[in-house]
Length: 412
Image (cartoon, one colour):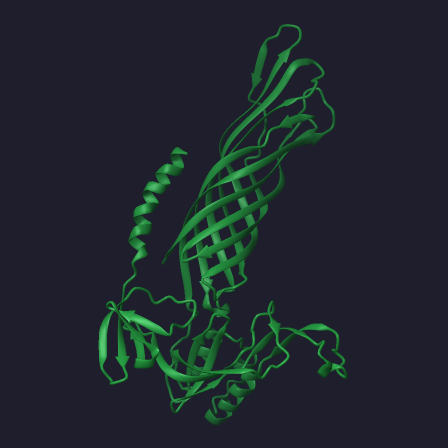
């Protein structure tokens, strides 16, 4: 608890300092006036329909554009797009031609005669061709299609649920490629529907030579929590072994520092987490009916360092409250430990303590996690399957653990 208290004392000022993130920005009104000021943030899960600049809120109805002096620009357009998913875990409705007409801000990704823009809803990102002030949706559909409607009765897919993917945007890009004579067929064929791949294509369409790189967002996460351990022993009967030692369940605190790489190439659905942990593990137990002693007990107390990585899959990347799951491996190193066997014999009733339990100094173990994140704060649970940590006289000591914690992310 002392270690965790010290960490909290360090973290609280850092968290308070990072809460406010003013960005130098501007707004262009319908009358053409440009107003300069500060926005509290420029990180949105979906494209906003209003912005607050220097304490004044500007609705989309009276705002032509807004932007940031670091280069990001948003302009107001009339939009028309299909209400279809792009993630393979979502369902494609029977009517694939359902569209929505609205007015919205569009983030300008590539300027030029044939520009590229992005508008993000709570469901998905949309990308648009911008020509002569007009927008055309780059069409892409991906999801589970249920071919159960009577309209499919003569279709070989009738009665099935299949993954449907329609990359019509590639044909649209090929048409632009022909007109511009840029010879980027291979780039279009291998492209995916994401900001990074599309920006490379539109840069080439406009004759731009500037290298396009993924817009990665990195977080430094500080966490604390508690692990719950289940320890068991198993093996062959032996006078001096751990056989039939009943170990009590135990808990141990941990602190962690993690680095999270969030890539816009996949719209934040697949991320990468690299972490360092300091953990504590303790357990004790007694052996039932030891064959030659009045009592036989074991005790373990260890401090460990861990380093590992996970691939994190986010189920709903466009939502403010995000649910994700991860899998990876951790390497665990014993930093210090006191691991003993204590015996009391029948003959002399003398207690003899031996520092003889050979705990493993290093091992690699698979890990899984579930995470729930909201505005930089993340609740998480991780699980480590059962692992041998001691092999002693034809018996082994196995430990599994589940941990619960909270961490806070600072943008880098």
